[in-house]
Image (cartoon, rainbow, N blue to C red; front, side, top):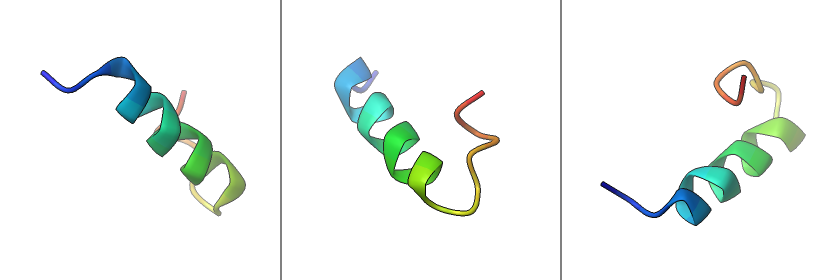
Length: 24
């Protein structure tokens, strides 16, 4: 399992991007 920090960063990255649905 990857660290949550990695997921959070990816989430933030997508949040600024067009697709932020994966974050939710």
